[in-house]
Image (cartoon, rainbow, N blue to C red; front, side, top):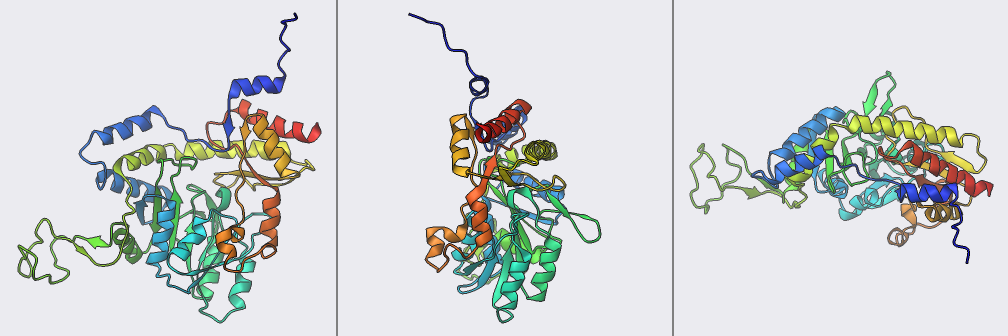
Length: 414
């Protein structure tokens, strides 16, 4: 019997060497572990000093006045909608190419989501389509706009702010994909995502595949002090505890002081219906540690993106790919490819786990019940037929990326 093994192909050797290559992956260092362990051994697991420290560091990083940490990005979106007063029947415009939470926050408040199509070159909410919706309805019909910094590419918030002001709308900037990303305004200044210069509120996510990983977690940012105070209250059951000045006369409270005296230590009051959307101190400690190397992560992401862009330039089977490196946060690197399903399966067979971002939200069964249907967003729907997110994370090695590129080319050239 012949026991000689068949020589392994180059691709087989690569699979054996690399193991699975996901589209995204968290990076946890010894410094991260130390930061979390120190907090676990401290007096506070939640509602402690690390949360405020994380908020202040994050606000400084993106250049805004106020930041409020919460349980996740979805909680951040919900509280933003509440703070801006979304009511049943209020109409809010957003993009169909996003995670469903960008739209769901409006539905949580009873509002109506109206989708506008995307720009085929940037994959972002098309401002011209938004303007057409606003101009076609009586002024005041639409209450707000939720642009999304999709894949890490930043929306031109200066242009959206001008449009929103013209029609009396607020703006929530969904920046889950782009902490550290920026666009250049009309005066040549870099405007970092979530800095509050154009959007009323902005939100970020700290899911494991994001730039800053806390396991779960989110952040809300603003330059509006009143919105900031509202968010703080809504985050914790609508309960407040002031030091030194009474808010209401609760005459039956045991130990009630006279006017001008200090609160008793136990005093608190629920002023509105809020939620328990708090983040923990050990998550905040992890976020603080990760924030210290956020810029280095962006540099690496942009280098990976530049290599993909060069590799696929001029390939007739790649219909489109993520945009310019300048200012792009590169949470994702997206290509539009011929025979997307075939390529997706071929990559999985070769231990490369690409992903699709996203199935258009307006075609989800939940939103189709409101009358949305195929054909309503033709550009978004065409994008979906071809889009594929390639591996993109700072610890992706050059050899792994070269293998991804070679495997894609192999699929089309076989």
